[in-house]
Each structure stands twice: as C-alpha cells, then as structure tokens.
Image (cartoon, rainbow, N blue to C red; front, side, top):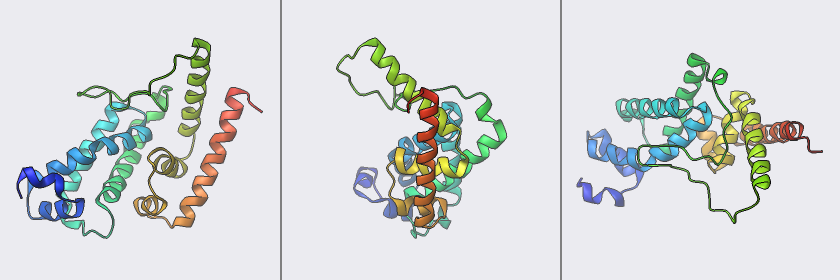
Length: 201
C-alpha cells in the first residue's frame, strides 16, 4: 500500500494492512487519531505529560495487539478503550489528583507543533467578564475532576468529545441505557457542584 494512497483508506482497511505488517499504514493511523486520543487522555489525567505517555503507550500496545482488532467496533472506539484503561492505571499509579491544578476546559494543550486547542477569538469583552468566565470554567473542571471515574469517563467521551452513545458504550463495555443513566447523573452532579462553587442559585 503506497503512502500516497493512505489518506483515501478508511480505518478498517488500514487496520487490515497493519495486521499484514504494514508499518506505514499504522503510522498513518497514529497521525490521523493521536490528536483526539491525546485530548481524551488529557481530560482524564489532567496532566499533559502523563497524557502523552498514555497515548504513546496506547499506540505501542495497539501495534502489538493489532491482530486482536477484528473490526467489530470502530478502530477509534478500540483505541479509546485502550487509552481509557491506561489513563485509569496512570491515575492509580501516580495519584495525579494530588498534583493536578485547575485549568480551563477551553485551555490549549501545548505540543511540539504548537498549541493544539486554541481558544476561539473573542470580541474583547471586559477583563471582569473574562475573569468571571474563567472562574466558571475552572469551577466546571474542578467539579469534573471530583467525579468518580465511571461518571467522568462518560462525561468526557460524550460531552467533551462528542462521541455517539453507541461508541461510548462500546469503548466502556456498557449498555447504551447505562451510558445515558451515568451521563445524566454526571451532568447533574457537575451542575450542582458548580452552583455551589460559584454561588449561583
């Protein structure tokens, strides 16, 4: 499979090539999905360096286990499940919560090629208004951090990554009804937490 043709191939076709030992196909899959997976890992761990390690380890694991990927789920769903599992392990091993600092949901993620998630351009609101919005965003993130892992995962995948319910369920090995139930409870918990944090009724 020529490199010049990789961008026309879907993930399943590229995965088939990977099983046949095509490293160029795998490298293209890495480039295609590493941004999204890094975002998931960062939102789960809260530490950019840990997120980078998680994603790197996830792709190494995926290459070693590519024979296990049979296409029953999307490649991105399979990779997301690996990243989530490694993120859980990282949080347990390093106690990331103790050294995590508040950050904005819209804060850019630094990278070697520049910032990956730049804040959208604004209409230059007042400094006070910006401070108020930043305070709310930080309160939201603190409240998300306070969620138990099972609730944080569905919130990150569905509300922050926009992943469809069926893919969230596949990544977490949950029924769609369970995903929706956890998401409802997670949203409700975050909403109540934010209200208490910023003093809104």
